[in-house]
Length: 533
Image (cartoon, rainbow, N blue to C red):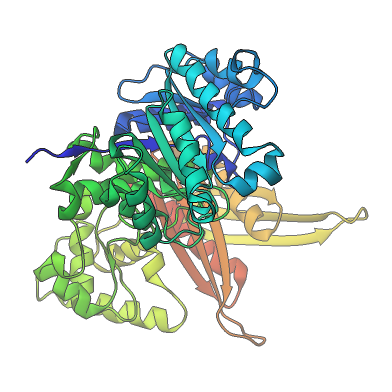
């Protein structure tokens, strides 16, 4: 049985850039394009040349893609001028892109209200734009904006819009659910109707996620006959985002109902790059990854309950729909006050700690975890702190930096400025080292006191120079004058590895310092730093 080809169109660099708070630099766009090309998507929509300086410069670059087709985005020509004399279309013609995707109206309501032109003028704009790019030998795609709403409001006119593009040489007609309000059953019915007019091999789907159905709508469109799927990395996009290609791609490749009937140009071995691609985007955006993303999230294959862990150890399929490694992810056995011995054993194995089944230290570790969580620790979100605790109890970690004492002060000067300063006395190889720093607050000052003085830490300085604090969270666990504070710190380094540490105390500075010291110790341990004398 011959499989039908599906084409993957990524619009992270254009539609994803519509996300609130996202502003890609030229270097960001180049890095993301390279990652997508390595993955093997068919089309990379790089942006809208002429719309802003970054996109214009991006398309002026000579971008060498091995697997993907660079695509420029724009809109159909304006009424009252020819396609040849439309400045917007000229910018697309002059861009270094072999393919062009133009958006145009397909809802008669918008033609009237938004464009202020007649239905016939809109059809002419679509057809003349299509002719222009086909004549210039650009692969032409028409993105039918608000198509599903237009179809429901005026079926005949919506169809006439997409036929105006298709009949004049468009390679792809992309049906866009622009406001994200269409549901999967509606997508199935409407795409099935459209295929009576436009062949499925020329039909695409562009779903927004405003009802949480963008992935479902995309898969429904495939089953109804569409053969191009548009979306973004991690579902990035305006409002609630776009269809998440990090979910769609592995579903097509790994789920039987799809992989037995369809294929893509993405090589099977490249599916394991999905998690890396997902987290690269978050790194570029300098934001915390969504741990609960399907397939690629850190929690996608995490198991906490003792009974669940026991079942996973016997047969992973019990609670895992695929092998994590297929998408480049890993299984994570969470340790918490709900953990049983099976959690502890599995977690120790996963971090490479050798032990005997009857080792009394296993029970000691389990009891320690439960005792600590009773007073406020939470190891299900602090993998590094748990590993340090386990290795200390199992006698498998050396001593690195000893914190002898520290002092933190906060004062307000005559100008109203709040000044926080910190001093920390550390011991390395029996030598006392004084570190000082200032910051926006006492915790920041304490962090700077250590991180900004790594050159003083002798043999540990080279290991700590690339250490960077990513996130800092504080939670008050109870109220009153003796409130317990839990501090969580996320750290990273130049290798792109993130780890989480935790500290608990009735004093926020002390809790922060405990989490901070664990971050330092974990960095030194994973980099095989030598022990302190």
